[in-house]
Image 1 (spheres, rainbow, N blue to C red):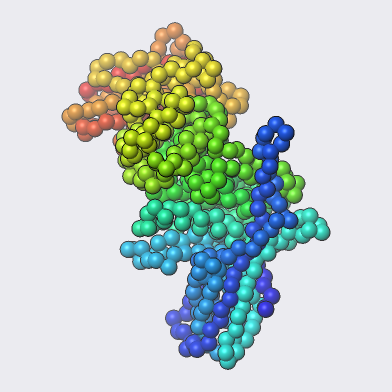
Image 2: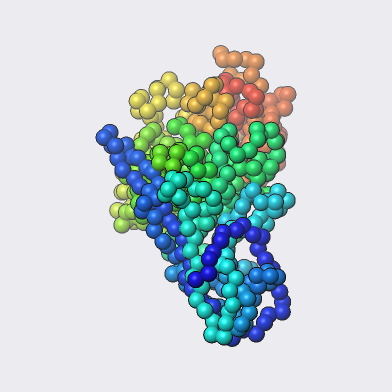
Amino acid sequence: MPNTRSVAVPVAVSSDRRIAADVTISGNITYDCVPVAVSRDAQGRLQAKLDYDATARYAVANAVVTIIDPDTRRILADTLSDVAGAYAVAVPPNVRAMVRVEARMMSADIAPDGRPAWEVAVRDNHSEEFRTVPEQAAVYALESAPFDTGAQGCTVALHAGSGWSRDLQRYPATRPAAPFAILAAVHQAIQCVLAVDRAAVFAPLNVFWHPHNVPETRNPHQEEDTSDDPLERLSRGYIGTSFFKVTPPGSGIYLLGAQNVDTDEYHPAAIIHEWAHYFENAFSRADNGGGAHEEHPDMRSGFTEAWANALSGIVRGTPIYATTCGEKQARTGAAFDLDEIGTPRTWYGEMPISHALYQWAKSSHIGFQPIYDVMVNDQRRVGAFTSLLSFAARLRRRVGVAGRGEIDRLLRSLNTVDGAALDDWGTCQGALPADVVAPQDQRYLLPIYTELVLDEPSPPLCLTDKFNRGEAGRATRGCVGNRRFLRFTLVQRGNYRVVGEVVPGGPQDLPLPYFDLYLGGTKIAHDPTDANGWVYYDLPPATYAAEIYPAAQQPLAGCFRFTLKKA
């Protein structure tokens, strides 16, 4: 069997002139998968490490396989491996050739627009191409040594090893299996969706990985980072954490890869978590702004992170979410059990919502189908901001009596309004228990939406940083109380203005906050109030959502009133 090597190469373009083919090259493609070993310590806490001794071989499914001329790099033939990693392709006899397997997989089904129904590539964000056009960054690939196709064809099997040295207890060189392990996790997620929607068409996805991708301030391989260019920082491995980047250039999933620091290629839990954010962007809607995982997050962030946690468990068929970090990848990173409810038990708590979503997916009275249907239909069109409230209200409509009972039971365990009283806006949400949020602090949370009525001043809407991590909440500004929500309904088109004022009794030198207006999840206005505290709009009849928040340099403090008026 020819030797193999792992290289990152730009995708070659096939020549229009093809040589007549009459022999077959076939084989199987496999990769090393290093599992995460999970245990519990004496206190019952989850512990995780990569278990190199349990490394197993798995098939590389649906990958792009090309037979190339080793001298000219011209493509002689191409195909896709099947789900078992097997391939077979006709090529000219008695010519020198190489087999190349790209870390790029695609569906054999064609979408109405002529492209594959799904396509995923693992690319090198340290490549030169990334610096110019990230979407054309080099794709990782595995290549055989050159061989002669012969008169009868031949068998060429390729295997991507992990690159781990048991003697040295480290990766001394390349990690050929890593890109294919990443593809396998994404493939599993795609198949989960196709199981409930065979007609689903996925936007092309790039996953960017490199062995030097590290947490932003801990890169031992690069000089001190002084660049203000986000793409330049990403091209040097300063990715901060594994994340999904929504906007181009360079949109896609970025994964950590630095050994002895944090590597995610063998963390399917984390890879599918990030893929879940891609799914929201491609199929559904997420109104959160991203950021850290807070204990008391903004309800939009709490839901989207919970969705990603839950989908990771749903796809993998396990409630255990575990990643590793540190020396030899032997320390526990993130680890939790979706069968445990977690805290804080609220409509915004990430871990309790993760638990609820996972339990609903497991339920014989609910299951993943209606959850998927809500995400791709109702949630993307709802007038309120996306949250557990809007999701659960719509899910209740898609299940029977027994399913609604299970939904309500878990909502009650989260101290969240349930039953017929539940709507997209959480209108009937009551106070939280004192051991969850102190009574004096609930004014920063409730009502969830303050309703504006024409010509009537609103009750005070107060901002706070009490629920933030870090000094004065400067670290994230992604917690409850950092922003407040409003809603109003117009029955006729007209010119309207919203008038803001600082409520007496608190700090009086505060500027009025920004007032952002949304219709069906789309931001239609981003306005600082003018010197008179007014913002003006020409609006058709509809129900609108809005949020207020201070400018980045302003404190998270103060109380404000708003009045909706005809202009």
